[in-house]
Image 1 (cartoon, rainbow, N blue to C red):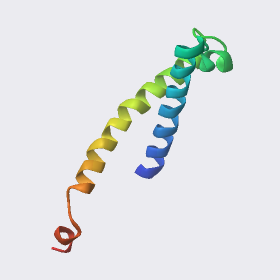
Image 2: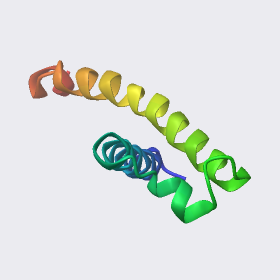
Image 3: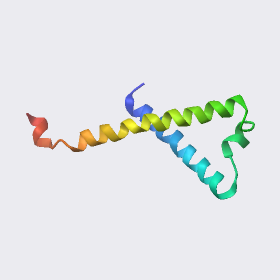
Image 4: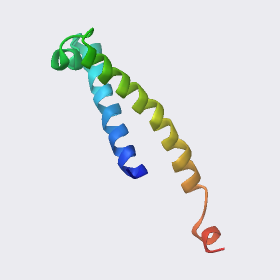
Length: 78
């Protein structure tokens, strides 16, 4: 799978996690737990773990974007 595809998957999971944390903070409502059978359910824990791993993966986006923007087009022409 291409890196860009992983980027979109990871970003989607991070957004899901952010929405879930917003709901928890504002309304004490855990959407992931409701959908996947409670906070202690195995599938919920898998989703929480995937969201955490996606967040860590998204850290690599900073490095890639920084590297991309620090080079001018003239430097690429060599």
